[in-house]
Image 1: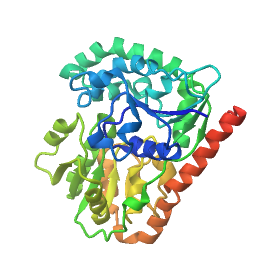
Image 2 (image 1 turned 30 degrees about the horizontal axis):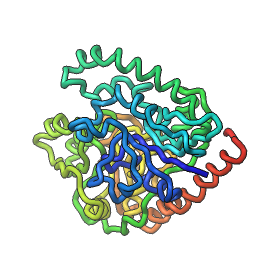
Image 3 (image 1 turned 90 degrees about the vertical axis):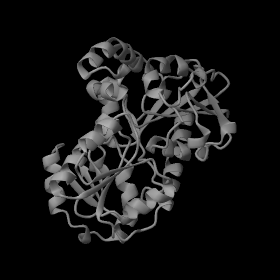
Image 4 (image 1 turned 30 degrees about the vertical axis):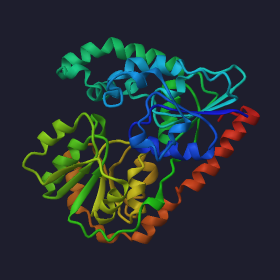
Length: 370
């Protein structure tokens, strides 16, 4: 059976890319189709010899300004010639589900979320940053473009033979917005990247892309109100705005850091904070792999991965006040690092690979739907 893999883009090192790495390991001979690829960033995830990029790769500055290319992604992914393949396995947050394939082929799509422009327009436009226009003007300028993307997105969501969601939260969103049922296979956690730390640092830690919907602004203000030091790992278009908001606080921005340094920072943190509503969110489980608890907004995927009082805490409202109150009450000494680590190991990659591969095989054999 000829197999092809598809992923949105491989020019960053986020959770979606880490998951795709494990999917690529399941099918080591399969070529990888993606819109953009940066070997310096993702070469250890997927070898360059396997990668087939779209025509977007040739555009000057495309890897750096890839979020501005949103209107072009549908054509890029529909332009891939996958006619030689019997099975297509894609992972996506937006675009890869829209590839075209033979009528007798099978396409299994591992979906991290329904496209954000389809259900969270304001947040999407905030991250899109159209030409740097003020928010009100930006929204008016972007609306016709986003409306066309939403129409494409709904049609593209009809194409995969089966969806596999990374959480029950996302499966429900797929049902609500696409009218499709989805299997659920929780994301893998690279537990071997982490060693159990001692939590001896005097700081809280946020690990996130700096995008509007991640709500890092809540963490900055909450840490300020609670009088705590906060370290932020990550980059993104909201960086300058967030740094301005953090002026005069005990917040430090570290940018992107190597995996080994991230593991050290996690293991030494008092806790890892996840301030926004995550579709699934690998960070709380990565925190547990490092022997540290997570404090996350009590919605979305965090309801599936955090056991309150055992592996972390939820704060009830998506506000700085709610998080600050939780931080004031938080006692890191109540958490057992061995229990935290064991919780993370239940999501280890080997288990994900076995479950996901068996599910794909079942869809191929039986065309089974959830």
